[in-house]
Image (cartoon, rainbow, N blue to C red; front, side, top):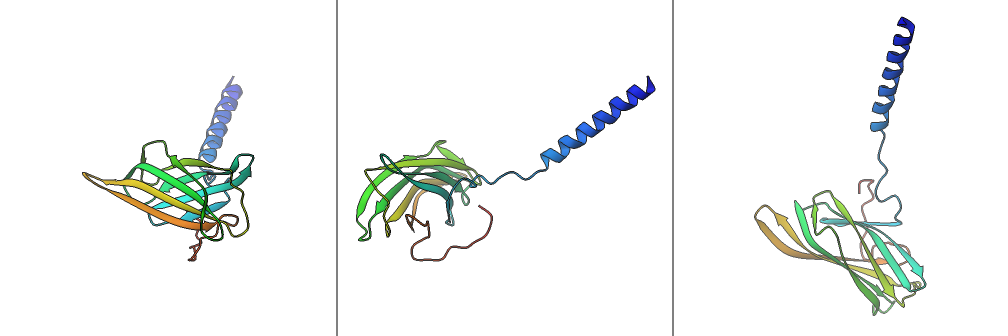
Length: 163
C-alpha cells in the first residue's frame, strides 16, 4: 500500500512540473503568419497582400503602441500605380471599437479588379481617436510601401524583433 501511495504522489509531482514547464514556453508572435511589418510611432502593422480572383486581398493586424486607448480605428488601403494614380481602394473598420495600449486587432480589405504589378505601391491611411483619461483627439497617420516587397517608400525601417 505504501508503494502504491508513493507512486501516486511521485506521478502527481511529475505531472505538476510538466504543467509548469508548459506555461513558461514562449508564445508565438501574432505576426508569424504575415509577410510584411511596419512600425509607426503610434500603431504597428503586419499584413499580407495576395492576388485573388476578385483583385488584391490585404489582411493583417494593427497594434496600438502609444495611447492608453484608440477608438474608431479606420484603415484605408489604396493600390497606386507607378504614376501614383489610384487603381483601387477600400476601407476597413476594425472591431473591437476600442483598442487598449499593447492590444491588437485585425483588418482586411479587398481591392476589387486590381492586379499587383512591379512598381505598384500600397498606401495605408489610418484615422482614429486617441483617448487618454478625460481627453481625446482625432488623429491620422499614413505610410506607403512597395506593394510586392512591403518595403517602406522614402525611409528606412528600424529592424528589431519586437512587434
